[in-house]
Image 1 (cartoon, rainbow, N blue to C red):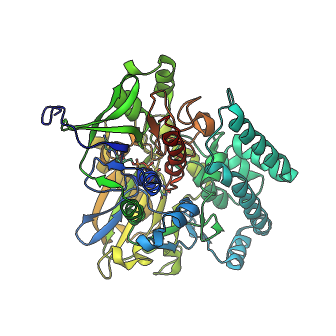
Image 2: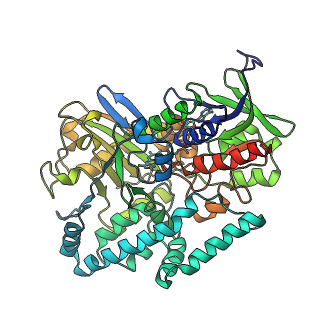
Length: 538
Ligand SMILES: Cc1cc2nc3c(=O)[nH]c(=O)nc-3n(C[C@H](O)[C@H](O)[C@H](O)COP(=O)(O)OP(=O)(O)OC[C@H]3O[C@@H](n4cnc5c(N)ncnc54)[C@H](O)[C@@H]3O)c2cc1C
C-alpha cells in the first residue's frame, strides 16, 4: 500500500491532526484560530469519529454510536460559535424505567413532578433526592475547572504544576466538610455503595447507578464506579448542570459544526485519508505517511487516537522509551458496550404506561433492580454478553422529526455488557444472537416491539473497533478508571499532552479529562501545543 506514492512530499504544515473525531476537530479549530497552518486527516468518509450521524437505512438518520450530549464544554461552544455553524441542542426530558411488576419510575426535568413520583416509591427518597441533586452539583462545580486543566505531574511538578496542585488543595480545603467527604467517597466507592447512603428504592438506585458503569468493565457494586457516575454528571446545557440533550440532526451535527468552525479559521480537512505511520526523524515527529504512501511533513503531529494506535502502531515500539511502551501495553481498554439501532414503523408501547406519551421522549432505561444490573455484569465477567442486559434507549425522532420519515422512528439502544473478549465463539458469529437478546429484553416491557422493527443494525464491540477505530471497542478510548485518570492518563508522567517523541502530542479522549463528547482534551492540548510552537519547542 505504501508503494503508490513513494515518498511523495506535500506542502508543509505547522500541525497535522490525526483523526477527524470531535476532539481532533476542536484541536484543529483552536490551532487554526491562533493562525497555525493545520491539516486534519480522517480515515473514514465522514467526520466525527464516534460522534457521527449516518443514514444507515434509507430515510433514517442514526447517531450510530454516541447519541446524547451534555459534557461538551460551554466555552468551546462559545469560542467556536457553534450555534452559527449549525449546532442546536434539544433537551432530553427525563428517564423512564419500566419495571417487571408493571410499575415504573419516571423522573422528568420538572422538579415537583419528579419529587411526587419518587415519593410514590419512598417519601424518604423524595427528600433525599433534593439533597443528592445539590451535592452532585457542588461536586460537579469542584471538578469543572479540573476539566480544562493540564494535569500537573506530582512526581516532578515544576513551578506551574506546584501552583496548580496548591490551588487544587486549597479548593478542596474550601469545600464544606460534607462535600469534602462526598468527593473522597466518589473517588473510591462503588456507585451502589455511594447511592445506598442516600436512597432506599431499589429501582431508583439501579437506574442512577447505571451512569457509573458506562464504558467500563466494572459492575455497579465495583469500587471506582462512583467516579464514573460523577463523570456523567459534569455536563451542563445552557448553564443547567447534569442536563443531557440531543443534537438536532444527530451527534454528527456536533462534529460538523466544529468542522465548520475549524474550516472557517483556515484548517484543511481531508477525509478518506488513513494514516499508516507517524514520521519520526532524529527522535522527533516530522509528519505522517498515509496508507497510500503519501508523505506529509509538519512541524508537529497531534494524534486524537488511542495510545495503542498512536504509539505502538504508528510510531513503533522500537522508537519509544521501554518503560513508556510498557505503560501503554498496560493501558486498559476492555470494551464492554454494544449498540443496537432500530428503524421503527411505529412507537414502542410499554405495558406499564401504554400509549405514545411524553415518557418516550427522554431516556428509557432497562435497569429494574440493582441485582439485575450486577447479574448483567456477572455474565460479562465470565466472557459472555449479558443474557439480560442493561439498556439505555432513546427515540430522538420524537424530539427531532428530521431524523426519520413521517410517522416512523429511530430507536437507539446502548447496551451493557458486551465484552470485547468472548470466551466461546466470536463476535462475527454471535452478532445477531446478541441483537436478538437486546430486542427480546426490551420486548418484555414493550411487547409490540418485534412487530414494528423495519431495520436493525447491531454493533458489537468488535464492530465499534472496526468502524470507529476504538481499540477493543472501548467507547472512551480507554477505561475511565482511577488508575488511568488525570495525571495518569494515558500514562504516568505523560498526561500533559506531550509525549516522549518530541513534536508529537495527544489530543483525544485517551488524554485528560477523558471520553464523551466533551472537546476538552482537544482544547487543552491545543493550548499546550500553541505555547510550545511559540517558544520554538514543538
Ligand atoms: C457506542 C457509543 C456510544 C457512546 N455514547 C455517548 C453518548 O451518548 N454521549 C457522549 O458524550 N459520549 C458517548 N460516547 C463516547 C464518545 O462518543 C467518545 O468518547 C468521543 O466521541 C471520542 O471522541 P474523540 O474525538 O476523542 O475520538 P474518536 O471519536 O475516536 O475519533 C478518532 C478519529 O480518528 C479516526 N482514525 C482512526 N484511525 C485513523 C487513522 N489511521 N488515520 C486517520 N484517522 C484515523 C477515526 O475514524 C475517528 O474519526 C459513545 C461512544 C460509543 C462508541
